[in-house]
Length: 268
Ligand code: SF4
Picture 1 (cartoon, rainbow, N blue to C red):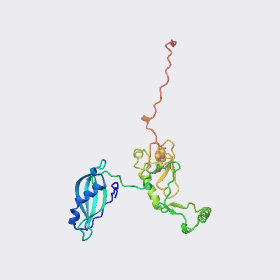
Picture 2: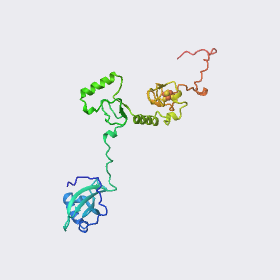
Picture 3: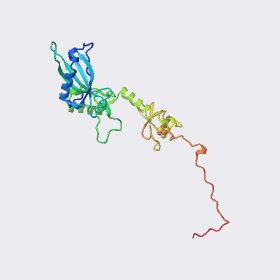
Picture 4: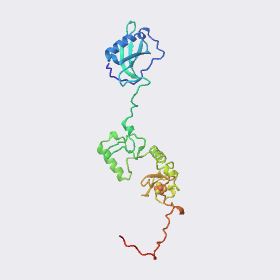
């Protein structure tokens, strides 16, 4: 077993396994084999043992290699039935409680956030994406040739059946929640100090379809939300009916004073 192997998976413990005296006493054997497999200077103090199963014991040694603070060498020994000696099962480096380990792996598909797409990037939607449902049904796609599927899609288009897939109820609810909780919703800082809601603003463009009872699109080029979805109870200071209080309005300038008593001085 290569000493460069790093295993982070936990080893399942056999329930109520009895400690095998010979396997437990084999710490020196484990160290000797370990030091033959990795640089002896990387092996530190003995940290104890774990009983993994019947005649199966793991001995742990501190790892003193630079950069591996908190990691431990794990040497598993096993004794075959009716044998007096153990054999080495595996040697791995495992992280202890204080070890610095990489965060859990997250698939790239789940890491993509809104705004991450660059021009030319493709982000295909899964066939079974719950946010979408088929608009019409014409049998199993896998049983059709590409030509057949194209032909059916064209006929569906001619019949006015529209897109192949449309937003499901789940997809609709997710969008509504996201929009309502986002910067176009009532909790946004801009909305909190708005004088009036979007529902009474002349710049609100109404949507068609199932989300039109809660959302619209802001069409005020001077507003932060221009071109974005806003909820009816969102709002901002650029509301169409906002009027400045008299004291906030620009004060008219006084008339010019014409000096008829003094001669104008010639510029030097
Ligand atoms: S201008 Fe302001 S109040 Fe009017 S629709 Fe846009 S965000 Fe809403």
